[in-house]
Image (cartoon, rainbow, N blue to C red; front, side):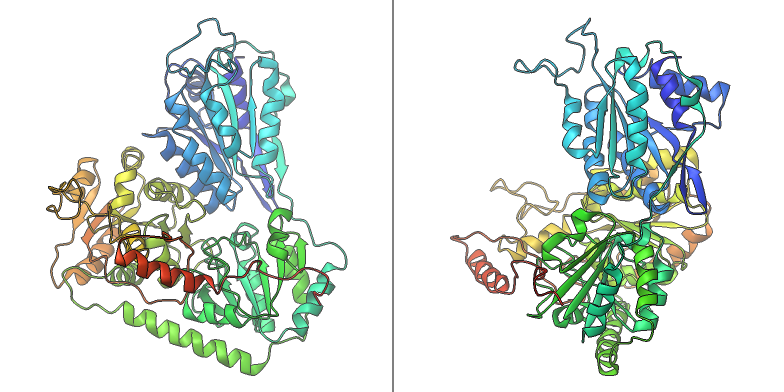
Length: 633
């Protein structure tokens, strides 16, 4: 066989086992073929499509970054049990995948990247699209994948394929180490001959580890919880990936402990559960953030405590607060001075903790306090959803209309701009996989490719992509892939003629939305005073073959959006709904803060004012989230 034929056939025989679930680890391969891989991976996929078409399905993509995003979204929807391989040609084709690699590794989601490399033999140096560095002849552009990958190998000789492939699979299926896995394939080696042992091509199972907590640690955690007056859980993505939502629900119902959710942890509890106070942190709810500020014990489960979750270390204000971090990765369990780090699987830890705390329940007055705050926040969300019959409605009104038209198992998809913050606060999740917002890397352009990945993973749900015009313009080419394969999903494109999120942030730091408006360049060389650009994104989407529904800017805009959602839901085709909004109508404030430095000196009064407010907010920051182990109990 060739090296490429051996690798592709090997990937078709790998299976992930997670308890009673057994699934293909690599469910298919995306590929854009150029001179680096057309005779290697491309030929291998073509040959297998004839000889054994179901073993490794091939899918087209229009942009290499897009195919990585689609694979990442698929991975999350399968709780990291399955993903795709992504093959690209030499040079720019491969480097186009770098952003996707960063998204995967930052989010701890598996994807297999197969970038092509220049000749290992160097017989034709320098080849087309080869980077030459006088100080290091061994380096290629693919070395840029090293800091972005959880595993990297380069197959310079055919015999190296076996260890590279097995090493890649180990990391793809490891819940601690997983992320972007990169096997760099020189274009000549891809087509070289290799003798392949039969056992390399046999079915192989990779079992996902679900380690239980160390002996005695759960008793220690239980003692700390039983002594706390106002304990609170911060649930992260680890709850979703370990399929621990049911266990978490049983635990909080038994103990009465309230829960705040990170972006990745949304769905850990349904929105209307009595113990779900909603999102916590910079884009959190008033209910969750007030509970966090007063908590004397924070129990982090599967969270990495990003600056948004911790509100840049201002969320937890109780002087005596302690932290219990339950995480399968020691890197996250020991973060920020955790008093009791628990290195274990989320679900297994919750189950053991439920048993250890039999009979425990938080005080009734604490329950009454957070229940009142939850009711107040829910009422604020209800009010923000009310149709005010504006020609340019608020983003909150648009979210409310889409929410009300969706089914409980539908999946909202987003990644960047102002939408993730509003969705974090406002979207009412009714299913543990119903919320898919990529906010670890917050990659503009992820949304549409991610929505297609969600739609691929579960055809019994509708993927609803909510995206602003800024992110849409970053990457919309994968719409063509969805049309080609007849993949049904819904895009709600909110046009505000600029970068809404950055515009708001720009105002906050005193820069008056500089560089964030889509305008003709004005006489001063800026884009502040010119006319709005005549952008017609609805026409762009229609040109790709999508069904498009345009909502006119009238007093009936929200009612028309509701009708458009109903029509899109009933259709079996991909649909884009285009609506204009007013980006200066903001969602309810959740009392969270995000640390974005403001210029220390400025001639602008707006920046001077913002600097004073920034310094005031910084006084609430804590140097660490919690205290050390010496006085932890």
